[in-house]
Image 1 (cartoon, rainbow, N blue to C red):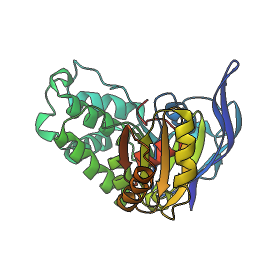
Image 2: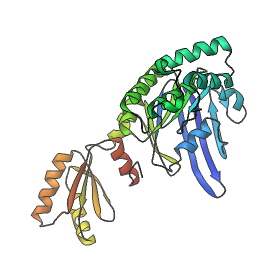
Image 3: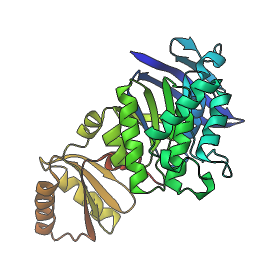
Amino acid sequence: MAIIEVADIEKNYGNHQVIKGIDVSIDEGKVFGLLGPNGAGKTTLISMLSAQLPVTSGNVMIAGMNLDKNVKEIKKLIGIVPQDIALYPELNAVDNLTFFGALYGLKRKELKERVNWILQMVGLEDRASEPVKNYSGGMKRRINIAAALLHDPRIVFMDEPTVGIDPQSRNKIYELIELLKQEKKTIIYTTHYMEEAAVLCDTIAILDDGQIIEHGTTEELLKQLHGGILELHIDGDMVREEVQSLVVQDDCVIECIQTKDKLSFLVTDAQEALEVIMGSLNSKGIKVSSVNTMPPTLETLFLHLTGKELRE
């Protein structure tokens, strides 16, 4: 059952359109991954869905309520983990969490119990009395997440929570996400790390230039890549056209995309295609500057769909 339903939403800043008519449905109790390069609109989109930014046009329903008409009620259901650390560095973890818990309206006894519980969840109960300024980047990230979970939200927005942190903290965050999944929390998760998206997310949407260009489970998305992509760098426009005409006849080639200086072939099997294609080109005396095989991964899919690297 969908807990978030988005219908044709847009976000404009003057004449600049950042979000361009997005439709998406997010199921309750699932991890929804939002992938895309810097500037694609990820942070703007989750800021709108979490009631931090107004929607220019379109409609958002959260837990059966219209976002425009029920902002106060919806905010009570939401926890937000921002990209930037939102903590008071001079205060210790307990004081930081107590402050944020009070903002959520938690009372003394309940607040103390929730702070102790969440510190155990993020594995920092033994460092709780130290000023946050003494923490590592990963520890600050974990307290940042803890602050968003104090009021036991149904929906948690996590905007790149594992950027630049140590492996121990990253694994602790992964464990926390798994625990939240067991508790049937809904998580909207943005990341640049494709491997963690594939592992953590039930459903993934790829965002580019303010639009969702593909959406589905990891398995559904990767099926589009078949056996991967074979890239050939070849000098000369006429030669590239000759190569394209020659290679597309091979049974192992599904699709060909030509760019400025290379040909990209979507293939049934990368190794088999490499042997077949190179054999065809050698028989014609055509030289290839370089060859690159790309496995069927989310990063490869994004490059195939947009022509851009995910981190551009």
